[in-house]
Amino acid sequence: MNEKGFTINIAGVNFQCQSFSPKLQLNIHGSVRHYLFPEIVISPDYLLEYYVVEAIDLSGYQQVFIGEPEANETLNYKWYVYSGIGQVILKVDFTEHPKIRTIAAFITNDSSKVILQFVLKTETENPVIIDPLIHPLGSLLLLYLMQRKNGLLIHASAVAIDDRAFLFTGVSGIGKSTMARLWGECGAQILNDDRLVLRPIGDEIMVYNNPMPYYAQYPREGKLKAIFLLKQSPENYIKPLSGVLAYSRVLGNFIQQFYEKQMVKDHLGLVEQVLNKVKVFEVGFKPDHDIVEMIKKMKF
Image 1: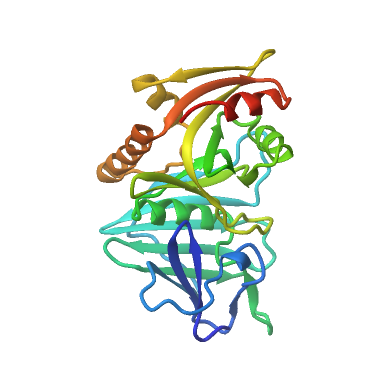
Image 2: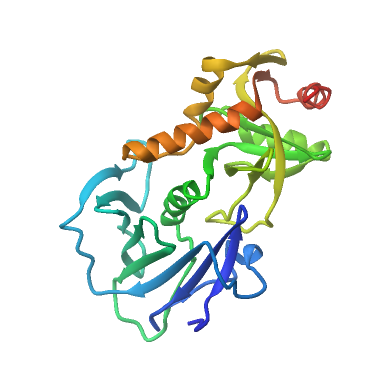
C-alpha cells in the first residue's frame, strides 16, 4: 500500500489515488503509469479512496442503468448505475474475476472525494493488486467525473499533425482504427483509436487520450479542428455538415449514461459548445492514403 497515494493527470484533471486497506494495492505500473504526476498535488481535482469491505448495501438507492452483454458478447461482468440523494453510485459485479466479487464507487455531488469499495472473493495473504481505473469501472468514473470538469467522452479515433487534431467517429467497425493507421503511416501522431476526452479550454476544444484498460500509452493531446463522421465508400469524398444535422449525427457517438435532467442538460450543452467551435464533415473513404491528403489540404 502506498501510504501517501499518488496522482494521475488525465486530460488536465488531477486524480489522487490512495488505498486505505492492506488487502488492496494500486498498480502504478499498468495503464496509468505514464499519467503519473511526479509529486503529490496539494489540491487535486478528485480524491479516489479505495477500501475493502465485507459487503455493499445499495438497498436505499434506485437503479437507473444496467449494462449487460448483448447476445453476441461474452463479458465477465455486469455494471450498474444507482441514484441516491446527492449521489451517483457505480457498481460492477464480476462473474469470473479470480479475486474480486464486486466494486462500488460512491460519487457525491459538490465533493471531490470518491469512495471505492471492493468486496473480495477469498482471503489471501498477499494484497490484491488492481488497476486504479479497473475496467469497466474506470470508464464509468471518467464519464461522470469528467463532466463535472466540462469534459466529454466519445468513441472515436484522433490524430494530430501540424498543430491540428482531427477526430474520426462513427458506428463500431466503420473504420476508426483504419483511419488512424492511415494517418500514422503518413507521419501523424495517433492520439487514440477508441476513446477520447474533449474539453473546452480557452478558445480551443482540446482532445486528449486517456488510460486504456489493456495497454499503456503516453498522454497525448491536440487542438481539435474538425470532426469527421465516417462512411465506407468506393470513392473518397468530404461533405460539410452544419446545424441540427451535424449536431444530431455527432451526438450519438458521445458516451453517456446520464439520468438526471441537469446531467443531460449539461451534457447536451457541452456537445453544443464543441460543435460551435469545431467543424463537422461526413467523409466517405476507401482505405488508402488519398483521403489523408484530401483532409490535409482543407482550410480550418
